[in-house]
Length: 78
Image (tube, rainbow, N blue to C red; front, side):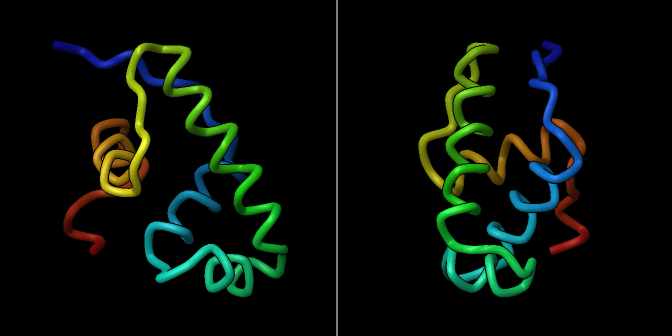
């Protein structure tokens, strides 16, 4: 069954991957030279886009699964 993938911007994907690899929003923010609040804003928008296509992702694990399903990362990269 094909998944309806939301259109994430390049920056949204970059923030998502950095956050998935980090232990906290603060750590992801430091890596990207932005604030934790900005990371949170991106994640809120990303989650809203997934809800809009009928694929909610409330947890970090769910967002990780969506990132893999939609080709933004692979298990081999982790």
